[in-house]
Image (cartoon, rainbow, N blue to C red; front, top):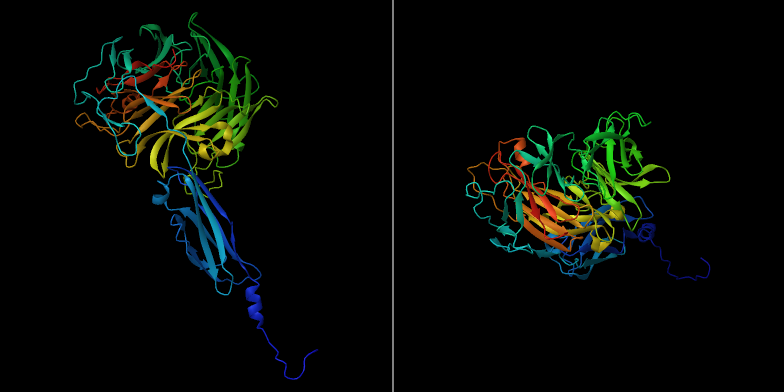
Length: 572
């Protein structure tokens, strides 16, 4: 060995040791950023990848969370590389955590390798201010319940059965004793109004479309309850003209029909069997309204086309929903129109809701004369999917079963519906900003589109005998929505089942600025009453100007459903 004299010490380093130190332990991502809004839902879990480089051999690793971060939960504390570990929040710690920034560390170690420290920063951002709860009077007979900002549990005076409350006769009024809403009985029994999102009141509240037990439709005068036009031609897919009180439309076969009450005449607006589309039939789902400016959506099930029609220009825009990416559409439930053009994105949206698949959000493309698919789903961030935002098979995704669209006073377009979250465990009403795209389920406090307005029911809530249910209806021309809730089915011999926000009619103003608890519906879903029990649900709708709510009630009597009008104190 050059330069070495007798007696030099020669040091031999085992080759294996050099190889071991050349294989650093690697953990990614690093650092980890976690963000959530105060009170939840909890931030989605993140996946950490643990690997070594330079060799295909596996090594044992361990992970240790720093003592100052008891909120970090790892799916595994040891294993063999390569490996993935889920990093999530300890739910009972994270739910009540106040706003702030909380640092933590995770040290990963393996024999013969330098340890790796992963820095974790958890930020809890403050919630937007809660709504103002208002009442026309009261609330009376209501008590505070832990976890609710308003006195949510109410006793309804003389609730029938077994109580003695009798509604006033046709045309009569009463003041709701709990919240002060002025309730007017507008029809006799055996008469219902059409769906909550499909506003049964005409453009300026002159007429009300009613649906009778014999399957016929009567148009009544909203002011008097007098039947103005008996047995008119209509279906539950009908919708009023946005400007004229005396005009409504409905699909028939593959055509849209215009009905003028003044002349009693009908005319065909467009026939899609004859105008080149070759549709064999069109539907709307019976549970949806129209825009404030006479745009209407529909679908052709046999041809798997979804469309919107501009009634003023008689211009149609369609898309093939069969070829939409993602989970295939099952049976279509309904279509839903935005109230107008979104003032931020400049887009006019429509929603295709399917019973067995995530909804499709479309927008009108005037240049191509088609509908563009904006996105499908998206994935529910509170679910147990892969949390990439896309709605994949087997994941829980957005499903607005009972919903309507809403426009705030600045022209922003939203979906409004009630959804379930696990952390916190509750059903709540929220608004979802459509121009946020696939981020519309993320909290608005984190840059997403979801704003929680009111927690209706916290766990545990009744989930047997039909459970709870609710409906949403929003005004066309003003920033108001109505939410109506029901209790589980019961027999006449059962005592009333009271729980927070049961059988209530609630009005939301603007994007959750104010919540007005308006009245108790006094309606009971009787077990064994079949379809009549469905029609006993209030299915409340709200007038275009926000001044009136239409709701059904059987007033606790089998076969006693009739239509009521309730003044909101808003609008006019």
